[in-house]
Amino acid sequence: MDHPGGARAVARCDALGVSPYSDAPDMLFRAWMTPAFGATQGRVAEWMAEAGMTVRIDGATNLIGRYDATTPDAPALLIGSHIDSVRDAGRYDGPLGVMLGIECVAALHRSGRRMPFAIEVIAFGDEEGSRFPSAMLTSRALVGDVTAEALAVRDANGVSAAEALAAFSAGDVYTARRDPGSVFAYLEAHIEQGPALDIEGLAVGIVTGIASQLRYRVVIEGMAGHAGTTSMALRRDALAAAAEIVLAVEQAGQNGPADLVATVGRMIVAPNATNVIPGRVGFSIDIRALDGAVRDEAARAIRDAIGRIGAARGMGVTIERTNDLPASLCDPVLVEAMAEAARAEGQPDRRLASGAGHDAMILARLCPTAMLFIACAGGISHNRAEQVAVGDVEIALRVMLRFIEALGFIETPEHRGIGAASDA
Ligand SMILES: [Zn+2]
Image (cartoon, rainbow, N blue to C red):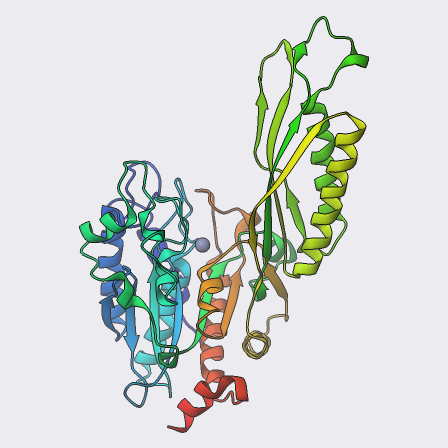
């Protein structure tokens, strides 16, 4: 069966890539609760209504279209992603998942069908954290994880998230919290943002989970000195030590499964002058893997290497852990259902972990989650060069529709909501 909805989903993402859906004239930039964000909500709401949904905006600015079940008040399958973007963004990171959700409902509506569960398509706001030093506040509101303190964060103009919500007429953010009984699963389709599917020539991949993450801030203290007069033997060069550590971090990332990654992404050199031996270097380390034990083993190897290299070079070393995020596993039963849906569409059962965070990791606190990745050209994202193939998006839509179909038949103790809904 042909679903031209995939092409329409892509075309709609493209339409949202320019003014008035971007706040910048020469690139796509749509931060949370800006005029472009509001305009985008308005347009997407029209598409939701056209697809047969009743539309509302909750107290956390989430745009939600609901397509009722065969029975009223049945728990809902949430299909979502985010409509905010980074600066100079691609058009598909986020919006594609929302557009595919709309296409799923449009296909059901076109054939006059309803499922034993409701479907709610949800467009989140604050996934990228490009306006406030925060992230995923709007999905966190669904699971009741928003506090006055979290809303006190301020944007570059000194406006707090709480003030911005009031100015956006958002209503009471705390009312966005969902009763766990009203939701039975969450599905998110998203571009891969990595090159694996593209390299293997695959359209889609089944996400097994979102990687655990550790971050460190490291400071190496050596001795600044004149670059012309201090002989090599007498130097304590903090940047040379840091360079050795960067290579050790890279090596630790290579000594593990494919989803283990380790990165030094930020470095500050002092005094950062051409004629001065670097006396002090600060840098970040970011380590991710789906399996927390794999991640922790890499972190241990890196800390050992820092200690060893620092001691051999006579450096002062401080290591501070700044972030420790557990993995968020997709629901095993839903992963199998998604794999079965992919196979039924003639796609290989390719499973992969997500190294990037997504709203799904927040929703996992509320209900079982599933994610489907769509290949993006060269793995490029957070970049205007982001590209998807329409044919791949068509396949993703067909896989999602088969997955939705299968949900009505899943019956395990952990998935009572789904089985019960189909009995109702
Ligand atoms: Zn995204």
